[in-house]
Image 1 (cartoon, one colour):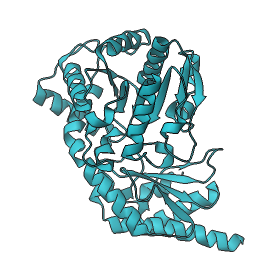
Image 2 (cartoon, helix red, strand yellow):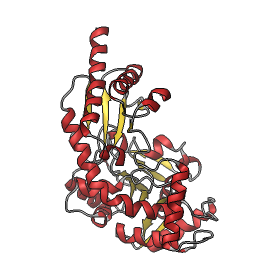
Image 3 (cartoon, rainbow, N blue to C red):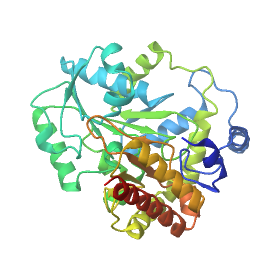
Length: 366
């Protein structure tokens, strides 16, 4: 990544995606919020801010109980362990693009003794027919990050839930980016989306922009057991601030903005249109995310992004996804406050410049 070039751009669309990015500024905002809400010292996740956040999330997701975790990796590993232990089957069904398979150093294997069972195809969301006949648990990521935020249709999701129920297969939702889903399935709120899942994980930093933390929601007995494993794994923090108050703060600040983020993503994709050398997936975007897939190698993709930055002053992203299963360089574009507050024409122009650079490189090499 060309850090000097990124610093010269006046519009940075890389992570994090919102305003208030300076740590000192964030601490001041959290302090003001804590004073306003009357939050003081809290020890070992027993205070008022934790209770308020857990109760709010249980209600929002339509589950009987919820527990705060310092990381989603901890929360999801524990969820998988509990479901598989209860089922007496240590096979964990995962899509090949699952966060557990790609980004957690095989923690589900080494920490929890689980055996991954690959289901589905890399390039598409899960379908009901992908579910195994039996396993301890199946994870479903909604939306699927490495497919650009792609989702099954609502009818397909209903079919997945029904198939799992018929086989007695517990479903867990990796809902790290759950907040945009009602825009993808109009008329379906978070409780309806989460219905049929034995447990749900959500992140507070990935789309909402909090300083960290996660929620695991499910039945009361399940959450009680998860709290025990939270303590065993060292997650019972002595001081939950600033993460917990910050989560409450950004929920109030940004949850209502999510439909606007999704609309802006779709506006940008439509404005870019069809361009040689570049494909947007999915198109139109289903949530506030899309992947800009470039028909070139990684080095050319980086040069194309840099050319767009030089010409437009727009930094489109920090790095390109590039996997053995999916070797096409993909730039992840997530719409947050900075993209929403900017002129969409600038972002569209930058993406077009990037595509033009790829096309010119193709013609030169050909």
